[in-house]
Length: 388
Image 1 (cartoon, rainbow, N blue to C red):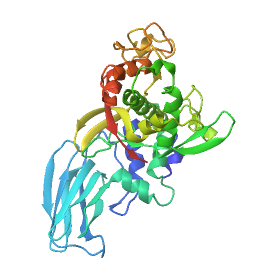
Image 2 (spheres, rainbow, N blue to C red; image 1 turned 30 degrees about the horizontal axis):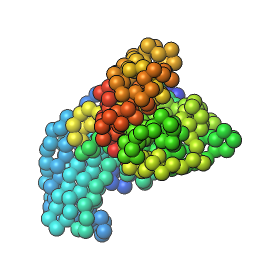
Image 3 (cartoon, rainbow, N blue to C red; image 1 turned 180 degrees about the horizontal axis):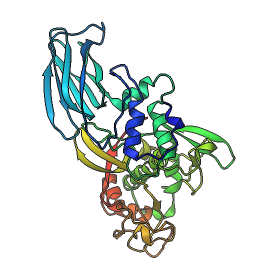
Image 4 (cartoon, rainbow, N blue to C red; image 1 turned 60 degrees about the vertical axis):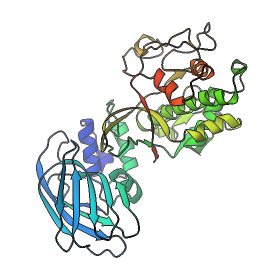
């Protein structure tokens, strides 16, 4: 089945499971393609072997520890040929840890177990640890036939669902680690469409959205300016990531994700102030996100990190701004903005991150950009992702 041909708006989590389970990888080979609704647990089994990554031969006796999404841990021991079988295994996502004498530990994080049986070949090495996640492996190895790579799955899920559930709410690692795009496509005012690395894009958004050369920043040291610019870089990256994976600002038929105007974010590759570039580089991959759960069972939701120029002492709830649709959003609540460096000026929609207020926080002693970001977005954390 080709996921691109699906037309019905399936329940989001069920569709994601369906899409992922259509993809095969070298270390997790499914016995069949029978798929269940993710919300319903059924009992199945898994079997396979532990394999030397260099020779392809089965290892000796190994211990396999597997941890469910609920944090329940169990262990099995292979036979002398490195082979194992696990019965009465509930469907879902599991993290697998493999240990064998003479080998480094192998970790396989967030690998799916589907109904109908599962066959695995866990590779371990005598030279170094093997650490993999399901999404990483699929993105690296792709998929045969008409199935989609993980990035294609994400693109199609965007088209098929308007759900607010995060695309990566089942992405499980030791730390919350969402994907951020490696590069983005931008349509310039001239009409040219360019592809640039994410961090280059962010640096040249920051330089115009919060230009450190503006007179309003007079009296601030470079270190203070840098804190404010880092906060803007995290916010701009979060905004770009959200509108790359979750809700595009431009139709996919246009061939680009962003324009270079305020409709998306102002992008100017002709202007490269050192502090803006430094701010992007020193916050690389950092985005604001809503994080819940625990190690190997994280829930991560991207946020629409909207921002504006200046406000008179406080931001407002998103539902109270005429610029938005009137629907409350948990992280876009009104908060105090006591250090706005232009407190008599209101410029922008007053929702989310206040640029002048961020500069004011930096000027008044805040040294961590993440503290500024989390002040303006209620219940949000700053996390470091990985490129995809």
